[in-house]
Image 1 (tube, rainbow, N blue to C red):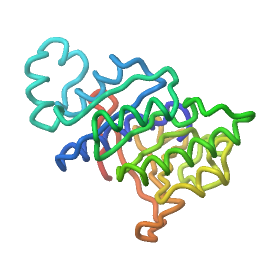
Image 2 (cartoon, rainbow, N blue to C red):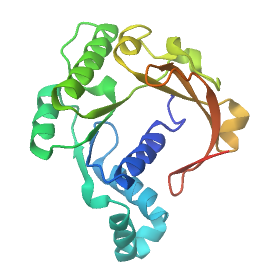
Image 3 (cartoon, rainbow, N blue to C red):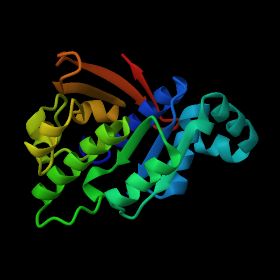
Image 4 (cartoon, rainbow, N blue to C red):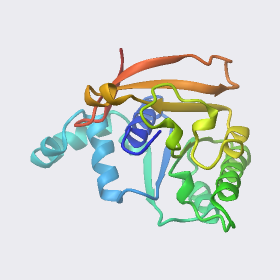
Length: 214
């Protein structure tokens, strides 16, 4: 997705879904401060706003724990590399690894295009080696600005490298009107899992971080 369209909000909802299935999630963030990320995840799990969490932290903690919070590990890297990530996976033994964001991981490359392809390859290898689900987050390019349904070519600096390495690609888009009304379109430009390349609309609630089908 483009900046501020809802990549982190969307992936926090994926995290909530994985935790609801009693899966252990390692959330690696290298863009937002760890405290901000933690508040957003607790808000989603407890369905309480930041202000409500600050006013009733015990209630928020109890609600979050009831939704699987104890199976969540948050690691903040700045920016970190795949050696660091592998060590975290070996230490915590998660079922799911979230990489937010892929473009910030240090992979020692001469160009952004090569770097993203290398990072995507490393992410895929991580999944294969440790038997984990890997969710990688990255930006959409300028071609996706004001666009609801995204395609493979809308990835910033990686029209081939990242698409070649993923089994499922999820695009999140919105035109100007949709942005104003908290509506997004989720598209599936690549889907080796089921072959479904449909798209559908969702509504978002930024105050508690929820995503709901329309």
